[in-house]
Amino acid sequence: MVVTAHYINNSWTLRSHMLRFIYVPAPHSSERIASVFVNCMLDWNIDTKVSTITLDNCSTNDAMISKIKKKLVLSYLLREGALLHMRCSAHILNLIVKDGLDVVKDGIEKIRNSVSYWLATPKRLEFFQETSKQLRVPCEKRLVLDCPTRWNSTFLMLSISIPYKEVFNRLKQRDPLYDCLPSS
Image 1 (cartoon, one colour):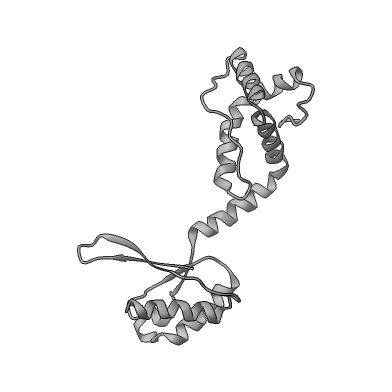
Image 2: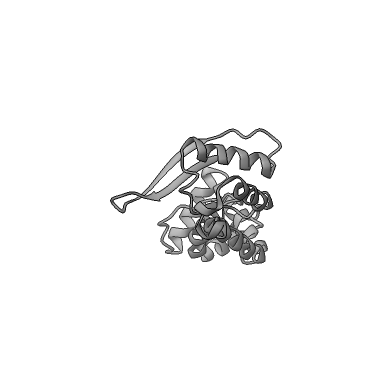
């Protein structure tokens, strides 16, 4: 677990510091994580200065926040701790995008398989680039395969692949082994 503090200093400058990188032995119960977290705050003498704790949406975190509130003096918390748990916006965005990508997963899988096919060997990639030049499709960006668990890499793969739609179609006519045409 990593505990990071974000605060505004006396000069009104936003600062961020990693306070501690902590090994939390299993089981990762809400009680254990809360205890480790509170001990970190006590070690840094910030238990009376915390306004929010940003966490992802894991159910263990909901229970952990309740336990942290019990260990801290509520009068030091904003609105007696009502605002203590802030949901991580990056995690929420990631969940939203993953749900959206799930709607078009078949199309993405076709593009992923197609990109994988053309990146599999230097000879195939060269054939892809030659075909792109013949069709006068600017080959400005090299095809890139995504990491399916990272939606931003899927976005990059799609944004690079889309201008090559005509190239993929032509390659289907020229390579009998190429059977994963994205638009089929």
